[in-house]
Length: 72
View 1 (cartoon, one colour):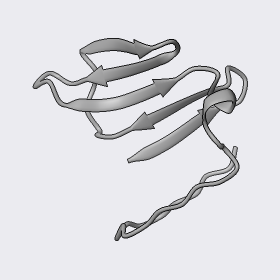
View 2: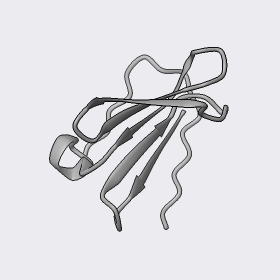
View 3: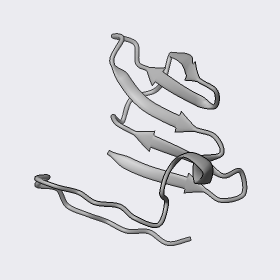
């Protein structure tokens, strides 16, 4: 899973799987769910993310994952 924030457009994209999206559904204003070929959820796109999400605070609990941080 990857969290990708794009400050120039204030959008947050959450990659849930490394699969291409074949269908997108807007479920709320500025919130789009992306689905793969088998109908599985592969990503979430949030426009105007700074108005909807606390981008300064990220907490992971009970996750056994390798954490990588890339600053651009």
